[in-house]
Image 1: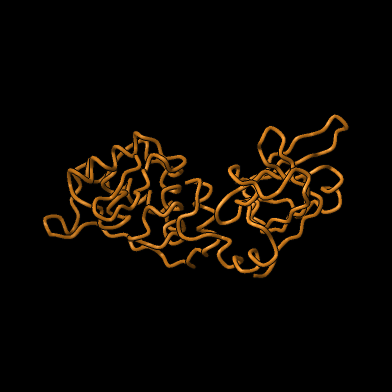
Image 2: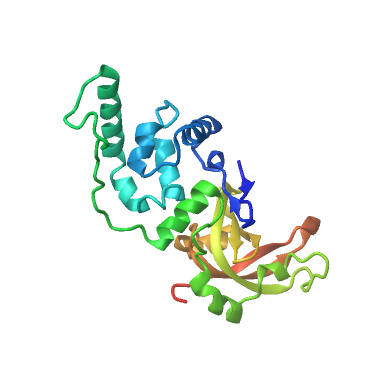
Length: 253
């Protein structure tokens, strides 16, 4: 689970909170580490964690989330994943069958060299973290856009500040941020309508997009696009929303 690191006050992200990694496998990983010490490499990890719960999907999720960053680069682990698991199974099978290798009795174990691979980009890492952890860890996709957002848009925090609201309902506002979620519904007339989550570096707000605007520019409505949104502020039920009237993709910081 989540915990606080003594002395530093940092928050440690729990393994069981990674998507596709359950409490069972997290418990197996931790028990093995307590019994036989820290894992020295991803090769050491797959050899020592012998559990049906550690399948390709759960291991891939841990890699993408950054659980092995101190051992190997993420994309390199992903490129080698299938061969790594095959090697682990074969090595464990030989051990069970009692087969003896050339180096048995010596202080060396079976080797598996990771093939080289192009490192994952920062954007890939951030997308994986958002998908599997629910938040960004390595950085923020809007970091390079911070200056232009401050210059040409208002902060989302200023819209959702209930203690001292700055903008009354129906005010025209312009925000900037990343599309972090899209929910699509079909209206009674059979046309698509969207409820988007747009977030800047501090807060998020729901943006309602009607069919007429989607028809004019359907390609822009995709998750992870960085956009300016201009629209009317709706304060219905004391939950701020923006009725989108115009949207523009931000291509360069």
